[in-house]
Image (cartoon, rainbow, N blue to C red; front, side, top):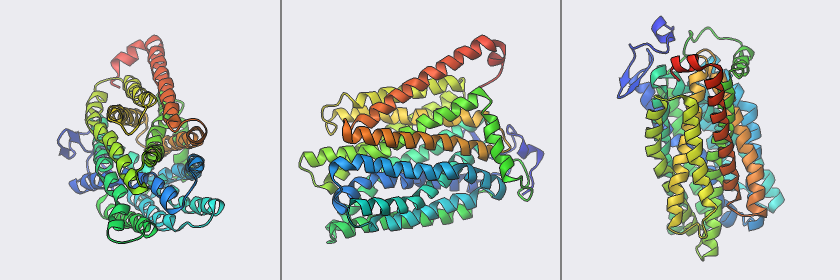
Length: 454
């Protein structure tokens, strides 16, 4: 599809309007609704590897409790090494070939991983090797999906409604995460109630996830907009040139801070998806629950986190379009700090107090991610945005890898809440960084900062 002058302009007013959202010219209802549909499932499908991990470790593989944190961290490191290797490439490839093929490939790879994951058997060494190999498929899918979710959410809207569009995508992500984990976490018990043994029930649960991922790939190939925004689809730049755009954009201090924000905000998501269920299932087992029952209890709090994230997606989406994105970043990371720090004060993480802490975690998790994504979306150039968002995801992968290493060690060797306290400190550091940069801009460029909408 050839680009028109209106389509090339991020602020044209001739595109489709959906409520408060204004799309660029050429974006149709089918494109937007297909994105929203997949957004509902997308994050939940990626996070399911963490949601099901406690059941896999405790019921299917019988991993000793004092080795589960390190194994979780090892698998996260492997995943993020693959993501680090692929996210920049995925963004660059999408700038050359279009978004749908890369997005759909991500879900197919995720499906292959979920087909293989529950087939691991043997002692701890053999299981570790098998899970690492199977995780390579999941990791490759995560790399493609993460880049495309962020990229397309920035592709479709005009600039003045970009934060609202990102918030809308996060809302659908949140609705999916708030509703699907209880269904996913309850699948093994459902199959057990049907008469299957615990291992077969677990395998069936994983294979249900795989089938869902294949369905989503088909929707993406049918429903998303073809081509690349800002230039004709048949005129493609060399891949290396698009990658260089991402590195060059980092000379802008705001983009550089956006990359650092990805390091923290993506780790916020990972620490909840990977360690929360593992922690709460251990607590439930210590209180006499079966693994399946404890998994259902753990996913209840996971749902509370995501349920409270939803209204904050709306609030932050509105606020971020009205204030400097650096102020928004400080606000989002500040709420996240309060949420993660509060977990350290819980004597019983399965008590009613966990509902209050989970509410703050959900609000902070959403605020941190929307503010970081909105900042990078505002500052990224139109041409090569896929490469810039790819590097944004790259730094997010580094953050997830670090929380896997540090959090896994803290989980096994200090306290199971350790990974969350690490994230509390990380968010606090970014709050300070955002405030320092705001002060620097106010001192060095007061007139420009005042005159330019952020």
